[in-house]
Length: 289
Ligand code: NAD
Figure 1 (cartoon, rainbow, N blue to C red):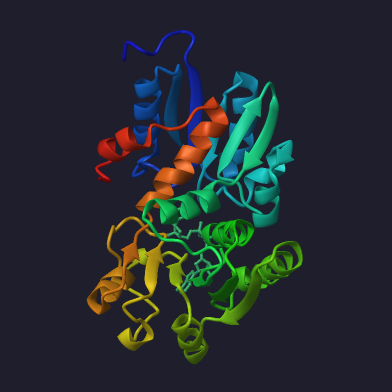
Figure 2 (tube, rainbow, N blue to C red):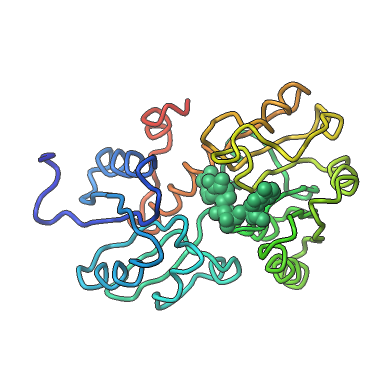
């Protein structure tokens, strides 16, 4: 047994499926060890069917909290006591904090993305951003970008359930923030070209580019990109998606989803422990330097 784990050690979980590939256990356990915090972080293969029982079990065992990933992010709120304002607006939870039996759902994906952008030296505040994807990750980024002061969001999605939900997100952003948001159909390639042409940054917030859609991008034409456009992908496995390869070939600065993964974790870590994650150390542990 690892010597730092004792009868006092508190559990923090990660509930998702599939989950065995996740870097989160490595990240959080390295941070606990570095700061001498008495927690252990473990991943549990949990889908929607086991979710209610899992949360009940966490309550019964007074687990400090957990991370939540697919397919549970948009379902788990049903079993919680409270939601943060951002989780409420996003309709998704990726972090649960247990304060003496009161379970609060938070979403740290948006903060994670915006922090990773700043950490990479980019500054979209007061500027226009085009983003594709209105699922959990895309919505969290849109809300946080609007709250942080991005001036304009051109939002694209395919015509699925996420498109319908995005109409409410756009309404909320326009009513509650100073950001101007507009929703477009991703099938309208000429509109996408037009919106990208005067954007500071372009973000892929869909799973296009990772398995089972690895090697794919909906940007079929390199002329939609220009060397000044910053191109970001929330996907981090592979580290270089087809979109980022295309963007690099044009000379665009690029950013993959590894920084978002790191900083969403750092925000969750702060919620559970009250302490800053030792970012430089964790970048070394995860080979992000
Ligand atoms: P989700 O299922 O909630 O949303 C999926 C989104 O992709 C929706 O907007 C959907 O309309 C769109 N989409 C699906 N198929 C498409 C297609 N063929 N063409 C265009 N759009 C399509 O998923 P999510 O939780 O938002 O995750 C999206 C991606 O973000 C995943 O790849 C996930 O791994 C990644 N992610 C990364 C981080 C990170 O920390 N880097 C965090 C969360 C999610």
